[in-house]
Image (tube, rainbow, N blue to C red; front, side, top):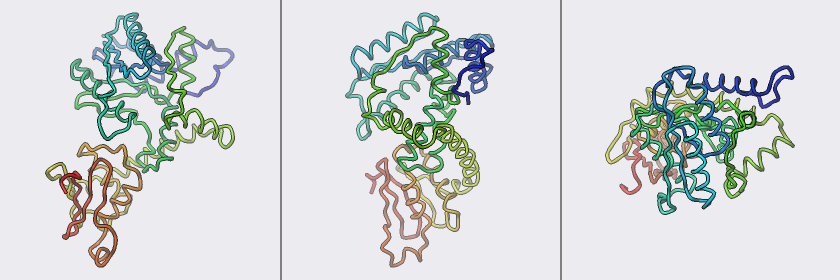
Length: 359
C-alpha cells in the first residue's frame, strides 16, 4: 500500500507521485494483460475515477498496441443539474483524450422493489457495465475503489455483523460476466495520494456534494466515526483494518479449500433450491460447515448482501443438528433467510433451502 505522506526532500513531488502510482497500478493491473483489448473504466467524474483514467492512459503506452479505453458513466439524476454536469465533465474528459464515452441515465421508477436505494443503484450500475462489456467485448472493467474505501467497508461490516469472509472487504478482482473481470487497481492506494497526483497534473475533477451528507451510513462512517476513532482512540485504525482484511482473506482461502468437498455433497433442486443431505455436515467443524454453505449459496447465484454472520450461524446449526437434537426439542425447524428464502428441516434430517413462495 502506498503511504499517505510527503515525498523525500531530495525528490521532486511530481516524479514521486506519478512514478510511484504508475508502479503500484502496473503491479495490480499489468498492461500486458490488457494490451490491445478494450477496457471499460467506471468514471463518476470524482477524483478517484479521474485519477484512474489518467493513470491507465499513461500505463497503456508501455505495452502497445494501446488498449481502447471506454469511459462509462451512470447518471442517476439525483442532484439535478449537478448530475448532468458530472456527465458532461466525463464526456469532455473522454473527448480530450480521444476515448470512447458511454453513459446511461436512470429514472427513480427504475429502482427494483424490495431493495434499498444504495443496493438499487449498485444493481443498475453493474447491469449497465455488464451490457456494455458484452457489446464491446471488453475483458476488464476497471473501478477506482481505494484503500480508504476498503477501510470504510471493513468497518461497516464489523458494525453490521460480518462473517470472516465479509471482513476481506472489497475484492481486488471478481467476475463481472463469464468473459469480463472487474479489476480494482487502486485498492492499495490512499485517496490523498491520488489527489496529490491530480494537483500535480493540474487535472480538475468533480465534487459530489452528496458525499458530505450524513444521511447514508457509509458517509457517517467516513465523515464522523473514522475521524473520531483516529483522533481519540487509534491513529493507525486505517492500517489496522487493512491488515485485518488481508489476514481474513488468507484465512478464508484456506477455509474454502477445506470446505470444497462438502460443497460437492450439496445438491441443486428445482425450483432454484438446495438440498443438504442429513449426513453432509455431521461431525464437521462449524466454521468449515458455514464456509461450505456460503459457497453452495454463491454457486446458486443468490445475493449475499443482507446475510450476516448471525444468519450463517443459524443455518449451520439447523443443518448440523442430529435427529436426537431435534427429538422433543422446541428448536425451530424452519429458518427464514434474506432474499425471500426459507431453510426447512425435513423428516429425514435433510435441510432444503427454497424460494419463500414455494412453501
